[in-house]
Picture 1 (tube, helix red, strand yellow):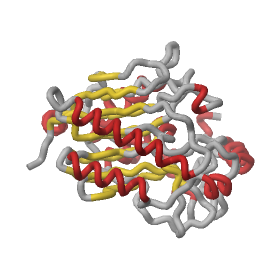
Picture 2 (picture 1 turned 90 degrees about the horizontal axis):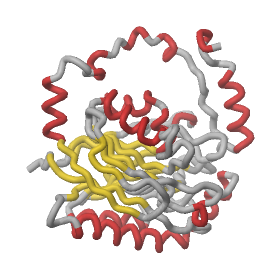
Picture 3 (picture 1 turned 90 degrees about the vertical axis):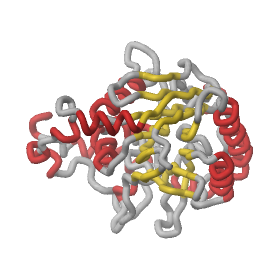
Picture 4 (picture 1 turned 30 degrees about the horizontal axis):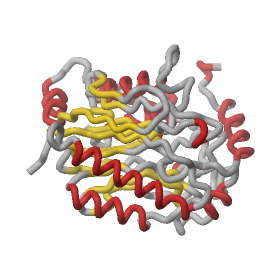
Length: 333
């Protein structure tokens, strides 16, 4: 039977960033224990069926080249860690959106992806690779840039707790990316993020809250957003302000972690039955059905072109940004 009313848990972490892949296992140990806390600890009060972790939960791109990341931190998927998440999902009958891995794939030698997996009781259900790396600093590859890439870039999975789709951090500053998940059927939009101040949870900007609420409203969907909570000592040169949240389809914040670094678990309700009823009932403010696609001439042109077969570097990212600025639409010049 489908369970369409349940709770999601967003699990912020605050652990030292690993420098080698051998150090990842201890992080997974801690995250598995957090899953037990979230699901079993809250069991008398909330039926937690979805658990979400932040970007860089397993490893951050702390090295300057893709080759260094591939040599020291990146893993193939599936791996021993995803196997452990699968066993935990089966044990507790839950769904886990893993924090991101740095991933290598033999089909794309030399490239590293920033990847999060949706895992359920039956195994790995989807694998999302960050489409919009945080350039120029991130030197992992966008699937958009690879000639002949045929995997679905914005996968959505139909589960007993709704249709789930995820995107990673900077992806969320592009309404087009999250809109594509919505058009692919997503009812729960999952944000796996490492978002620092001044763009995080602090006024006067508070982009974290602004973007999460906006994407929920414009796509008539729930947003389950988990942000890094690591302190400066663990993740220099940045500290991560947390503020993880669950937002409903009208942009209401249903639950939120306290702003500021630190390990936290926050739970909030997800009501897929209510969402489906509103999507069916509403005529006004139903932006998914009001789009006049043919009006947007800009989408027929290229702004940031594909990078080609070579792995990105900071220098090549900088050059591509300079080139893409010349491609901006005439109206914006």
